[in-house]
Length: 361
Ligand SMILES: NC(=O)C1=CN([C@@H]2O[C@H](COP(=O)(O)OP(=O)(O)OC[C@H]3O[C@@H](n4cnc5c(N)ncnc54)[C@H](OP(=O)(O)O)[C@@H]3O)[C@@H](O)[C@H]2O)C=CC1
Ligand SMILES: CC(=O)N[C@@H](CCC(=O)OP(=O)(O)O)C(=O)O
Image (cartoon, rainbow, N blue to C red; front, side, top):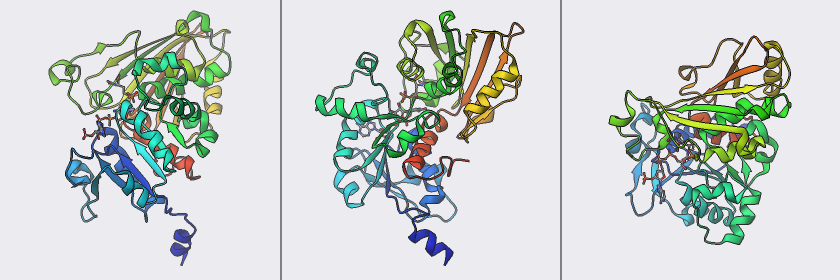
């Protein structure tokens, strides 16, 4: 009886959810999270692969790690708008290359389907910052309107706007780790911005997606640590827009770590006034008191990649120098989860009016 009530009331959801790009790394994590999501118990998400390139296949053929002992084997359908519409799709996750998301998000919205886009296609409002993606719009006027409407999908900063958004631009993995560390301090106005902020970030190889490149080739990535895109990484734009900084005030340098997944960002800054570790801790804790997926370490304990891999958390920690002014923040997350699929599901929860961490803890 109780169960029937919950189904009828929609507590267990009859929200038709679809994923495009399920054959990729982020798509695999999305599938895993959605299949285990308590609110989607009775309305399984629908998974799509690339039309024309694939024969109908199954999720467990693509990702054997998702197999269960006796569970059903979900089909993976060739992508088809008519099929999405017929199924009454409400929310579509796009786990695709940026160019493809830029094309498909308008198509989905035109069909009344809300979008959570995992790519960088819709994250940046400023044209000069977005130019790094070299995106070409089929309908530039419509794209401009949708761009203005798109909400940057950082739930800890924009949860109210995400709840009613039609187009959510899920943040980049590096940017998530850095924005979550810096936003509380910058919003409190205690950072001496004139001294500059340095963000030294390191990512596991899955951050680059499944396509093999020279950079991710085993012979290059293994037993190695290398910096790249020192002044030109596309996540810099997200830092500038979300943290309200200009390029002279923040330096972000990404590095490739020879591990499969995880990001660690070490952030160096100066405070305007002498302060205490307790005051910094109170500020961080207060900022994230209603954010179940951000964990604050008690200083001087610092987050480590091992603590967050395969979780949906972003862990934050810091140490303050004896002078009370030089602060080093450390931020850690799993690039495929809090940096991509986990955050995307967190956004879906908000868009559906469900608790933000449902299915993610
Ligand atoms: N990896 C990460 O840590 C993060 C990734 N992201 C973003 O999420 C998105 C997905 O990333 P990720 O899973 O790593 O990438 P992958 O390269 O692992 O997967 C890409 C997916 O897109 C599909 N695809 C590629 N080209 C097309 C096309 N022209 N039409 C339709 N489908 C296509 C691929 O299908 P097929 O198998 O047929 O090639 C595959 O399913 C990207 O935009 C990425 O920038 C965001 C944050 C972190
Ligand atoms: C290790 C690695 O290569 N990481 C990727 C960032 C991944 C990410 O966040 O994806 P978006 O492309 O969606 O921003 C890079 O530096 O390009």
